[in-house]
Image 1: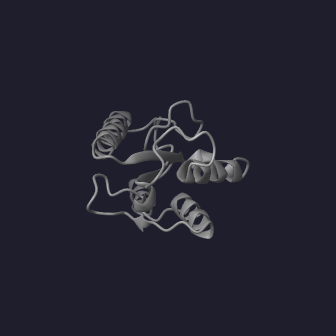
Image 2: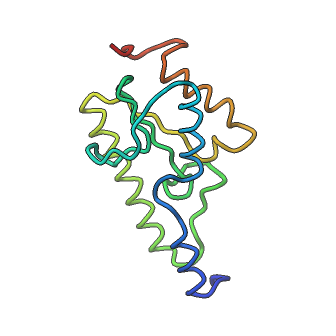
Length: 148
């Protein structure tokens, strides 16, 4: 199957995709801030430059795009039909890096939470954000050690 866009159009489209400060990240950040939580953004001192770092809770939140991080079973992740081998290698590399970074962070005592882009769509957003807040502040059935 041929790409419906020219090479120049595709290159332009791809150049517009941001690696940080995406709309899903901003949604999560604004919600957490409105709840009184303070955080650091894209901390370069930590593996993977996490999207949101909450030192008080020793917790990191990654906001993953379903396509870029290969969200299994998600309708928003479909391997492209053109240049398939390139995309497969690229996206699997992203997934492997995600696993490695998560392990490094957990090994150094961080709790790592992931919010998927699809969980922030209009029908699920409020529930997702409320659950995230509860998990961060340990309000329901806390199974980890509460912040000191």
